[in-house]
Structures are given as C-alpha cells and as structure tokens.
Length: 327
Image (cartoon, rainbow, N blue to C red):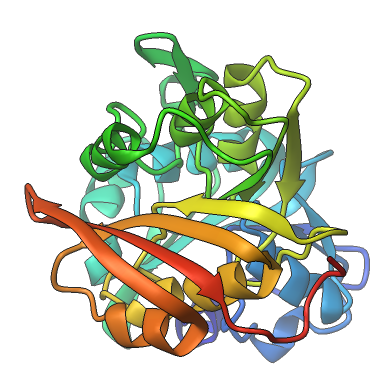
C-alpha cells in the first residue's frame, strides 16, 4: 500500500536523490514519483528480495551508505520496526514510516511524535504514514544477536525470537533416534530443529533451508557442524542437486497476518519433489490445517503420529514421481 500514502508526504525528487526502502513487500507498488530515482531495497525475505531484483532494483539484506530519503514499510514485529526506523534515521536526512493499522502503525506514530519536532502524518487506505527529519532514535537500534534461549542465538525479526516454538519441540520428541543420511530442514528458522536432526544417529548431510536472511544467519551461528549446508532459499522452490532421504519441517502458515494453508501445502509438494523414492517426510502443523489431502496427492502413504497441544504430527512416505533432482 506504499503507493496510497507516500505521494502525500514525498518532497520533490531528482535523479540524484538517494532513496532506501526498508522491507517492502513484493506486491507493493511504488508511486510514480520514485521512477527514475536510484532506489536501494533492504529486504531479507528471499521471495520478496527476488521479486525486487527481477524488477531491476538493487537489493541488500542490510542498508549500505547514506541517503537523502529512507522509507520504512512497517513489519509485523514492533521491535523490528523500531530497529529499522533507528537505522533509517541514522542514515537518511528524511524518513517516512508507512504501515497499515493492523501492522501497529498507530502506536509507532505516537512514539515518533514524542521524538521528532515537526513530523507530518497522513491517513489513507486503512493505514497511516509519518515523515520526519530529526529526533533521537538510537535507543531503538537493533541490539544484534540475542542470547535469550539456552544455547541458541536469535535476532529481531525472526520467528519465535524469545522462545523455542512449541510445535518444533513436539516434532523433535516424535523423531526417531536414527534418521537417514541426507536430510533437509525446510523453513529451518534459527536452527532449533536442525540441531536436533544433527544429533540423531545416521545423518551425514543436512540442508538448512530458510527464506529469511536474519534467521539463516542465526542458524549458521547455532549449528557448528560441517554436515550442515545453508541455503538462503524459498523452501517451496528449493532444489538440491540430488534427491534426499528425508525432509523434516514445521512449515509456516502465514503470508501476512491471515492464515494461508497454501503455504504449508506448497512446502509438502516440494518435499515430495525433492525426496528419493524411498524418502520420508516428518512434519508438525496446527491441527486445523488441511494438509491431509495434499499429503495424499503427493505421497503413496501417510499417517498421523499424534495430536497434542493443538498440533498434529504427521509422517509420509513413498513420494509420488514428479520432476525434480536426479536420484
């Protein structure tokens, strides 16, 4: 929704104006006034990063250099939003923060109004934006690695930043003591499941696949093991060079704030595609998610291992033949 409110706050731009946009979504349409201006996109989510690269933008996972204008598209996490605003304010002469009401933009604007001397704000299309050119936001800065979970490092903006996800815990408890040799953890996050997989007997190779760059950076710190191979990839499109023996996953089921079962269904479909004929899939999901039909469509057999704590643990085998990596 950036195009709805930005034109109301943007000052005249020239071809020399340096602009950075933090965390825009792939579906965001930029206002025409940004055409012809060099724009750097800060985006760590691989599908969105790829979409902006395909549109010809320079895309980085962390902002580089200084700018005349910084635009922050508010993410879901308030702490991450504050950290992005702090980074933007440290790099740019003018900052615009934009978000939907469901993203918590109202509380952010209240906080910004207390710090900036002459902010301008607008409201349109179920959201708001605020522009400012001064104020001290240094205490909102990203603190860097967070040692909040015993033995693990996390960072702002990653899923389950301050706790081990309960679904992943249940899946770890359900895994057999011995696993096959070549395994993938699709949507690995900061590496909790991956560490448990590497602790199982039999694993010789683990593909740690994660679309969020910040989470993958954490996984690299949390998994000091030469068997781990790290991939900044969309898990629904990840393709290893050879088929795998097992896929283990706790797939996400939100693309924004609303539940989207098609995301987990795409994880399942890709798991079947990259598995060898003898390959197996273990996954955990909220018990209401409709994954059984997808498992039946892509595997010769599947069974429910347990339902506990609002989650279901599923196992599938005999992936049905489709195009994919060589055996």
